[in-house]
Length: 214
Image (cartoon, rainbow, N blue to C red):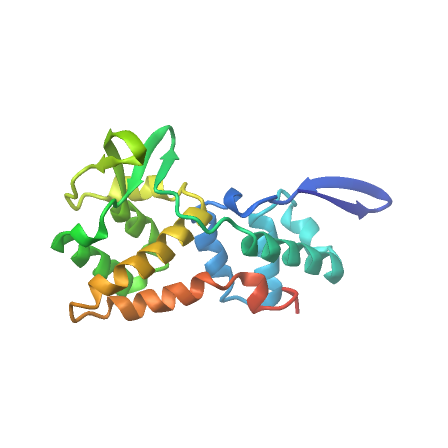
């Protein structure tokens, strides 16, 4: 969306995101990090990350303008499409969400558990690299096969940073709801961590901090 800012009698036009799918996983991780700062710093960094407004000019914005933009960002997140995209495309390559979580291997499970237990927020690219893998074969009615899991996810994790935050959130919610029956059969802290992540997904920076300014 376009934002008009008046300064010294002149009106300049800038761009603010128009839909939540414009936000990549990499940017979303920064937004989560910003939420631990003061309200004023969070608002400044959030607007800077999701618009082309210079930080120096953001400092000069009125609290009312800041509140309006933070409110708009909040609305976009609330209005996002919540459906899981089983097939995504990153840099021209197709990746498929794990087609059957009931068949998840012990190796996949162990790596997911470690990543989510240690620091799920910082590990989201790696988590997505496990849940989404290159499609090796596609059939009719949306059926597809993904590459076997070999544990080598570092390169793919970098690619997953380009996923939209919306796709990541939907994948995690889907994984939580579909996988909880299976995963609770093993003694693990994974489900507790997933519950916390699921609660985090229902939040957004501007909801937590009101108008985003101090």
